[in-house]
Structures are given as C-alpha cells and as structure tokens.
Length: 247
Image 1 (tube, rainbow, N blue to C red):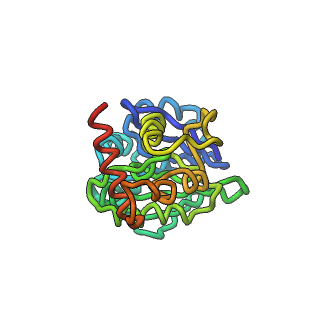
Image 2 (image 1 turned 90 degrees about the vertical axis):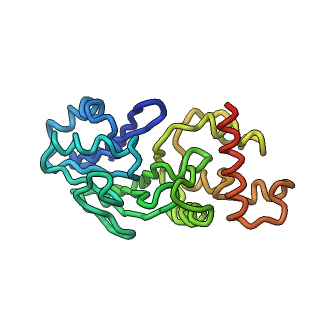
C-alpha cells in the first residue's frame, strides 16, 4: 500500500491511497485537478472504481467531491452525511472492501457531527495500518470543537487511541509547527521527536506525547489542578484558541 500526501490550499492535506492491486482511493480531494494530476500514472492501470473517503463536511475537505463524481461517474463517495455529496453514508463500525484494501469507519463526532476516521489495512501485507483523521486529531494537537464538546473530543480521541500503536496517523491539516510552539508554552519538547522532520506520527506516539490524549503530561500545572481529563482538554483547547488569535 502506498500513501501519497498532497498539499492543498494553505494547510490542507489530501491523499491518494494506492492498493497492492492498483486500487485507488482519494481522501478529502478538495482540489480535484491537482489530485488527478498526481494520480495519472495510477489511473491508467487501475481496474477498480475510484473511491473517495470524506472525513467531514467542511468545505475545505468535501468541496472537491462533486467534481470528482462528474469526472468519474462510477466513483463511490463515502462520508458521514449527505452534506459531502456522498453516494454512501457511513455508520460507525462499517467496513469498506476495495480489492485488497480493508477500510474501517469510525464515527468521531465533535469537530463536526459527521466526522469520521478511516483506518486502512492492506490485507496482503503485515505493514502498519493508516488512519485518516481529518480535523479531529493533528500532530500533537486536536481540532476545534465546532459541533461538539470536550466530552465528545475526549471520546473521539479515546476511540483513535484504541487502534494499534503502530498505526500511522494522516492528518487533515499540516499544523506541526504551530502545535509544537503552543506545546512549548506548557511543557518541553519530547526528546524523541526533537530532531525529527516527520510530519506524521503513529497512534502510539500521539498517545505518549499529545497532551489532549495524555492529559497526565500537564495535570500537575496549576491551570489544571484538580481537573478531570475532559476538563483539561476543554481548558487546553480554550488556551490554544487564545494562542491562535494572538498570532
């Protein structure tokens, strides 16, 4: 299985997944012509229908779906609601089979009510799975609670945490530097990531170093004294929103 990240707009990340039998899956293809150009060599040999995975309905993730459908009439578009031009509405626990690819759908409402994470496995290989998390989880960060609460984000992150630790996380935006800067306000950089130029972490690394997922990293600070994990997540997100507004 090959995963090709493609930058879009200012910070967005969309993806091409190429399966072992030339299966083609697009994730959040908000710039259809750009992703088509990157996929040209695979489109010429793929014998399966194109599938699109939509992580949530926000325009900067779903707006390309209508054009993809016009370009590929048989394309299957998976999403959590009809707001994303979906041909298939996903439910929590659904499994999508595309050739040798197995895709597990995880409903993680909070950032939006229709937010989904998609965990993709190559059934012909023992290589690590990949999970596409949209606007819910970022590199050592998490998304804004546009349509949910801290309790819902806590639940969403716990569901992602339940995946195998070696699962590679593919984010909907590239916010690494911004999140690292905010993290330094509260705690030092993790030594094992200091010199890393990677922009994708594993589930295990996120569970260890992301204080939204591992609130014990900050619970001894006075701002969080006596607070539950959910309350810490709420306070952290408020602090991050304020930090962003000052930049």
